[in-house]
Length: 68
Image (cartoon, rainbow, N blue to C red):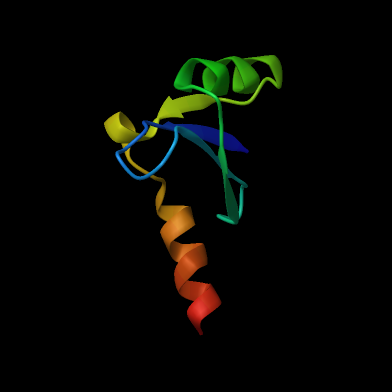
């Protein structure tokens, strides 16, 4: 599993995207980006800034499989 911290936008609060090894994912609002990074660190999950590194290909592949 990996965590991707997403910056807030004018429409959305900061969020934490958790992506499993097979690409399945879930997104949850978090109080702040700092909180999201601390959560991932505490859970010993690798954490990345989504706006910097983007999302892994396995997430896009999983989304495509769900449409079939």
